[in-house]
Image 1 (tube, rainbow, N blue to C red):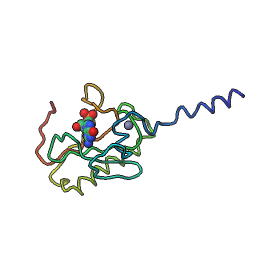
Image 2: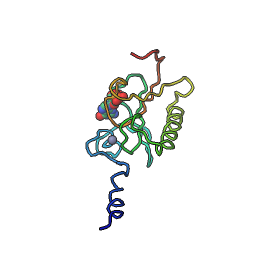
Image 3: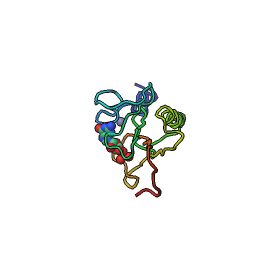
Image 4: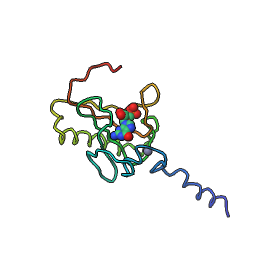
Length: 133
Ligand code: 5GP
Ligand code: ZN
Protein backbone atom coordinates (compact mmCIF):
# COMPACT_ATOMS: atom_id res chain seq x y z
CA UNK A 1 0.00 0.00 0.00
CA UNK A 2 1.37 3.44 -0.90
CA UNK A 3 1.71 6.20 1.66
CA UNK A 4 -0.90 8.33 -0.11
CA UNK A 5 -3.39 5.47 -0.10
CA UNK A 6 -2.82 5.02 3.62
CA UNK A 7 -3.44 8.71 4.32
CA UNK A 8 -6.53 8.69 2.16
CA UNK A 9 -7.87 5.69 4.09
CA UNK A 10 -7.24 7.53 7.33
CA UNK A 11 -9.24 10.56 6.13
CA UNK A 12 -12.36 8.73 7.34
CA UNK A 13 -11.17 9.52 10.86
CA UNK A 14 -11.73 13.22 10.17
CA UNK A 15 -15.35 12.67 9.14
CA UNK A 16 -17.79 14.19 11.65
CA UNK A 17 -19.21 11.73 14.15
CA UNK A 18 -22.91 11.62 13.31
CA UNK A 19 -24.05 9.79 16.42
CA UNK A 20 -22.22 9.11 19.65
CA UNK A 21 -23.27 5.71 20.93
CA UNK A 22 -23.47 6.71 24.57
CA UNK A 23 -25.11 10.13 24.21
CA UNK A 24 -28.53 10.77 25.76
CA UNK A 25 -29.57 13.39 23.20
CA UNK A 26 -28.35 11.30 20.22
CA UNK A 27 -30.61 8.53 21.52
CA UNK A 28 -33.54 10.93 22.02
CA UNK A 29 -33.16 12.34 18.50
CA UNK A 30 -32.99 8.80 17.09
CA UNK A 31 -36.18 7.85 18.96
CA UNK A 32 -34.35 5.24 21.06
CA UNK A 33 -35.32 7.09 24.25
CA UNK A 34 -38.83 8.58 24.36
CA UNK A 35 -39.34 12.33 24.43
CA UNK A 36 -42.14 14.82 24.03
CA UNK A 37 -41.36 15.88 20.46
CA UNK A 38 -42.10 19.40 19.26
CA UNK A 39 -40.39 19.34 15.85
CA UNK A 40 -38.31 16.96 13.76
CA UNK A 41 -36.62 16.94 10.37
CA UNK A 42 -33.53 15.29 8.89
CA UNK A 43 -31.21 17.80 10.53
CA UNK A 44 -32.90 19.06 13.71
CA UNK A 45 -34.99 17.71 16.57
CA UNK A 46 -36.91 19.62 19.26
CA UNK A 47 -38.48 18.21 22.41
CA UNK A 48 -39.76 19.37 25.79
CA UNK A 49 -37.30 19.55 28.67
CA UNK A 50 -37.99 16.89 31.30
CA UNK A 51 -37.39 19.44 34.10
CA UNK A 52 -38.83 22.70 32.75
CA UNK A 53 -37.40 25.96 34.06
CA UNK A 54 -40.30 27.96 32.60
CA UNK A 55 -43.89 27.23 31.50
CA UNK A 56 -42.47 26.56 28.03
CA UNK A 57 -39.05 24.88 27.92
CA UNK A 58 -38.04 23.30 24.63
CA UNK A 59 -34.65 21.84 23.69
CA UNK A 60 -33.59 22.13 20.03
CA UNK A 61 -30.70 19.95 18.87
CA UNK A 62 -29.00 18.83 15.68
CA UNK A 63 -29.03 15.08 14.99
CA UNK A 64 -25.29 15.40 14.44
CA UNK A 65 -23.38 14.85 17.65
CA UNK A 66 -21.51 18.08 18.47
CA UNK A 67 -20.39 18.45 22.07
CA UNK A 68 -21.01 22.16 22.55
CA UNK A 69 -20.59 25.63 21.05
CA UNK A 70 -16.89 25.25 21.90
CA UNK A 71 -16.65 22.28 19.51
CA UNK A 72 -18.37 23.95 16.53
CA UNK A 73 -16.46 23.96 13.24
CA UNK A 74 -16.73 26.25 10.22
CA UNK A 75 -18.85 23.66 8.40
CA UNK A 76 -21.45 23.77 11.18
CA UNK A 77 -22.22 27.45 10.52
CA UNK A 78 -25.11 26.96 8.09
CA UNK A 79 -26.72 24.32 10.31
CA UNK A 80 -26.49 26.61 13.35
CA UNK A 81 -28.12 29.38 11.32
CA UNK A 82 -30.98 27.04 10.46
CA UNK A 83 -31.20 26.02 14.11
CA UNK A 84 -31.76 29.64 15.19
CA UNK A 85 -34.31 30.14 12.41
CA UNK A 86 -36.08 26.98 13.54
CA UNK A 87 -36.23 28.41 17.08
CA UNK A 88 -38.08 31.41 15.66
CA UNK A 89 -40.54 29.15 13.83
CA UNK A 90 -41.11 27.01 16.93
CA UNK A 91 -41.76 30.19 18.94
CA UNK A 92 -44.38 31.21 16.39
CA UNK A 93 -45.99 27.77 16.28
CA UNK A 94 -46.07 27.46 20.07
CA UNK A 95 -47.54 30.96 20.35
CA UNK A 96 -44.90 32.77 22.41
CA UNK A 97 -43.01 34.67 19.68
CA UNK A 98 -44.90 37.87 20.39
CA UNK A 99 -44.58 37.86 24.19
CA UNK A 100 -40.92 36.95 23.97
CA UNK A 101 -38.63 34.10 24.79
CA UNK A 102 -35.03 33.31 25.60
CA UNK A 103 -32.56 31.15 23.65
CA UNK A 104 -29.66 29.76 25.69
CA UNK A 105 -26.64 27.64 24.76
CA UNK A 106 -25.04 26.53 28.01
CA UNK A 107 -21.43 25.68 27.22
CA UNK A 108 -18.90 23.82 29.32
CA UNK A 109 -18.51 23.64 33.09
CA UNK A 110 -18.85 27.35 33.86
CA UNK A 111 -21.71 27.61 31.37
CA UNK A 112 -23.65 25.02 33.36
CA UNK A 113 -23.77 22.42 30.59
CA UNK A 114 -24.75 18.96 31.87
CA UNK A 115 -25.58 17.12 28.63
CA UNK A 116 -22.67 17.15 26.19
CA UNK A 117 -24.62 17.27 22.95
CA UNK A 118 -25.16 20.86 21.80
CA UNK A 119 -28.70 22.03 22.59
CA UNK A 120 -30.53 25.32 22.39
CA UNK A 121 -32.83 25.96 25.35
CA UNK A 122 -35.95 27.86 24.27
CA UNK A 123 -37.62 29.28 27.37
CA UNK A 124 -40.90 31.18 27.47
CA UNK A 125 -44.19 31.71 29.27
CA UNK A 126 -43.03 33.97 32.11
CA UNK A 127 -40.88 37.05 32.52
CA UNK A 128 -37.29 35.79 32.77
CA UNK A 129 -34.92 37.72 35.00
CA UNK A 130 -31.40 38.87 34.13
CA UNK A 131 -28.56 38.27 34.91
CA UNK A 132 -28.76 34.47 35.18
CA UNK A 133 -27.69 32.83 38.44
P1 5GP B 1 -27.83 21.76 30.17
O1 5GP B 1 -27.77 21.80 31.67
O2 5GP B 1 -26.84 20.77 29.61
O3 5GP B 1 -27.75 23.10 29.50
O4 5GP B 1 -29.29 21.24 29.80
C1 5GP B 1 -29.65 19.91 29.78
C2 5GP B 1 -31.15 19.87 29.88
O5 5GP B 1 -31.57 18.58 29.51
C3 5GP B 1 -31.68 20.14 31.28
O6 5GP B 1 -32.55 21.26 31.24
C4 5GP B 1 -32.40 18.85 31.65
O7 5GP B 1 -33.59 19.07 32.37
C5 5GP B 1 -32.67 18.23 30.28
N1 5GP B 1 -32.73 16.79 30.30
C6 5GP B 1 -31.84 15.95 30.88
N2 5GP B 1 -32.17 14.66 30.67
C7 5GP B 1 -33.31 14.70 29.92
C8 5GP B 1 -34.14 13.67 29.38
O8 5GP B 1 -33.91 12.47 29.52
N3 5GP B 1 -35.22 14.08 28.66
C9 5GP B 1 -35.51 15.40 28.47
N4 5GP B 1 -36.61 15.69 27.76
N5 5GP B 1 -34.74 16.38 28.97
C10 5GP B 1 -33.66 16.04 29.68
ZN1 ZN C 1 -25.07 13.22 20.93
